[in-house]
Image (cartoon, rainbow over all chains, first blue to last red; front, side):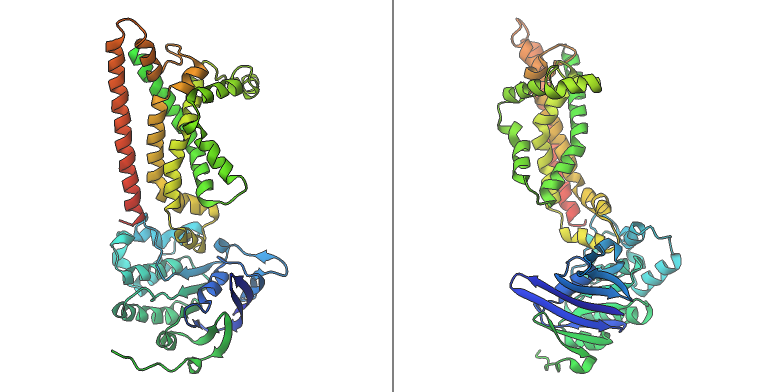
Length: 227
Length: 225
């Protein structure tokens, strides 16, 4: 169970958002500029709320009333960014293994095999991030986050920088992840069709506020595609 | 005399560079990544040797680190470390004179690193010092090497501060530069002076080329190839 109840002033822009979600995939839906990324950054611990609380499964991550703030690296929250942010000086194998090494976790061959097979990245291990396609990079970023064994996975528009064709290539992996990886996810997107395919519950965000919470029925109808 | 001076210069420059590098990395990181009170002052202090007449720097060093200087007297008494008129003093002078050249490429290479990579590392469980060791430093490595080469070259050629602080004692503080200075004031010293000039020019040229090469590699590395 993820509980978020925060307020944050960012220049002219104010976020005041509150929701609790038990879904396997919590969709954070809203137009660009609605405050989705700021909200996710607060969950990750990259941004500190001015007021409020954030907790996962009863464990408090932020509580401004007691001034408690668990630093980013101790939150065990995986984060997949829109731009994969793979480490350019490490090959794919070391990128994938990074989280395990930093958290001093024992090697887990079964998990490694499961994640690399789930994402079809077993053939990329010896390569450098610069030699990968956008879709491949994003799959590696997913694998890297999963292999750090997070208790929650944040995905901030992971398809945002990809063209339509690449999106269609990655979506099935995300669905498999949802159904097989067993890690709860927060999925950020402004695309209603992605939300329909992935989210199990949806938080609608408008101008920094939660305006609706529920299933796919709260999403706007998809406009007819003009091609 | 020539070989003694060359070897001494190499020793002085090597020690100066090796001691200054960790400090240079720390200062470069502070300047690139932190906001703090007195940052402008620190930045200015580091660049001071670049604009101050070297003889002034040397004299200040003599006042501070000389036998009767505040720091020099304490160091001599408690650690047995004497700088005045010793090769260690030459290394200190060279280290300070070359420090701005050492810091600059490191700072630039740290500033060029995408901070979002450091954020990604933190979300994967890396503590701040781990982020520094596994992401920041490796990505800045070429800049560090470029800074070291440049600082080393500057240390090899340092003259004004060194001769003011530790004088020109053959075998102890007479580096290539001070040897050239002594030779051109000696009758028939020109051939030897010219040989040292050649050595000195070649080393400076090689250092510039190496520094440039490292800088270019740094760029490639940031793009993940």
